[in-house]
Length: 291
Figure 1: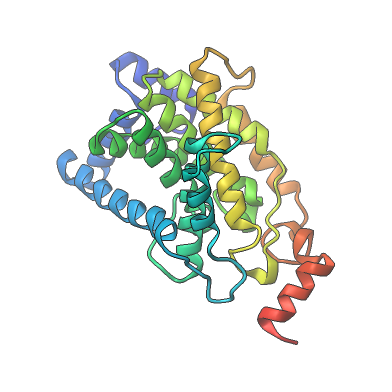
Figure 2: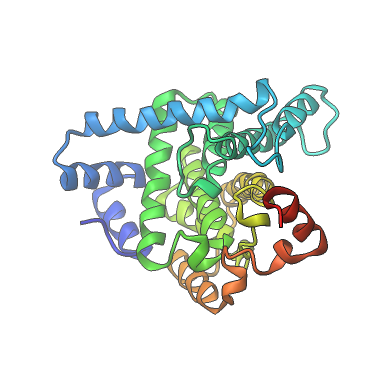
């Protein structure tokens, strides 16, 4: 059985001198009875789906069924190629990939819910972009996905991944935490550093509400995927520079769970508060759903 906490995960990884991705793969093999090679190949198929959804919106304008979002990933990608961005081509391209996945999702395309459909763009954009920047192999990206899965399992065990239960902090927050930890380990960081990355991301997104316009996973969800990707990547650099989190991963996850429980139902995916009930939010709802 997979460990119940980050503290236990660090103990196991330290005692066996293994990484988070190795532990996660090993435990999945024990639980399913499948070979590690079989499981690794299954995860590689997920990566292939991620690559397609992260690329589709860069090459053509993808619009949601409602028409609320679409075409933004292509705009970002073209902007990145001009070479005059403020944050650099790498960061803008990562945002483009994150929004591409969100646009594909809203257009009823095929995505990987990592860990949810609403946050589906964060992990793909972060891992693919970091892997490209660091000249990593496809197998390295798959390993990073197992690292992300390990962190996600612990979050799911001790908090929630659901926007309806814990707000967007539980969806985009968890996805960004998973992605940042995965990149840290991809960069040669220790399991402890990977958990620090996850903790910092969660601390920085505590309290983010889930307030979808017209109840659809489109606005503001797509742009929050872009923001989550940037948070994950910038935090990875923070940790690799030697910065540590004073609040451990387990405490950050606990805080996220408690904050989520304290959020009123209006701010947990009901579209009864936040941006969804602003004048523009209500106008867009009427435009999409009618009277």
